Amino acid sequence: MLLLTTIAEARSACDRIRAQGKTLGLVPTMGALHQGHLSLVRAAQASCDAVAVSIFVNPTQFGPKEDFAGYPRNLEQDCQTLEAAGVDLVFAPSAEEMYPAGASTFVEVTGLSARLDGASRPSHFRGVATVVTKLLHIFAPDRAFFGQKDAAQVAILRKMVRDLLFPVQLDVCPTVREPDGLALSSRNTYLTPEQRRQALVLSRALLAVERKARAGELDSGKLLAVALRILEGEPGVVVDYCRIVNPDTLEDLPEVGHGGLVAVAARVGSTRLIDNLLL
Ligand code: PAF
Image (cartoon, rainbow, N blue to C red; front, side):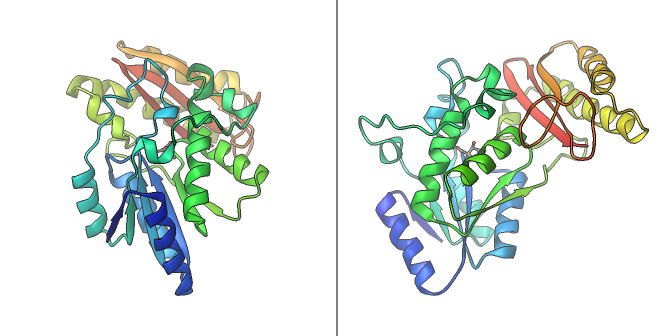
């Protein structure tokens, strides 16, 4: 497995892969890898000849009071995991490499970027769209792989790829959960055992909505009332949003039809967690 840190090295490695007539899959990550990331790697390996994983804790997607400094970083362990998984190359650039001095160009998917997490994290999706644009330029992959857990990110990147005419297929892989329902997240490492137990309320609330929708309740207001009752029953969990939206536009849906997305974000202690289910 190649470990590359410069854009020039990454471009040459991708050129070599393409010169052999191979297809390339890209799995963008911020490291602190878990089974969710590895499910993206496996999906990439199943459909592409070569797989690249980027590991970059992207400063522009963190707000000034967020956890950029404390975000878990363990490049050595991540590389061992990826090597064992059979990944072809890892790209782990510095912030200076990705954002040359004076860089002031950003990509913003207007409208969508202000919905769901974008409402409480105002520059978050601008940072995500900008760094993913840079990665797509560097790698020019045939396919890029993202997790359904970041449903708003998925909607924004799909729109960005369409609007900016990127010749790439986005693949979205299902959320990977612990046996007790907790969605895997690099931020789960911040949780104390008691907070981890409290965090289970997110998936419990989503499942209750799914059950009620399956039983025939279509009214989003009534479905969300079920979720909020469960969420508010867990002291220590502060809800940021709980909404039922169109998964492409992220706009509220008054009624769930086929394909509505129920999404929740909440703080457990100082850790902000997100989760969602497609109804
Ligand atoms: O989902 C993530 O880990 C990040 O938002 C991404 C897509 C790697 C961009 O930094």
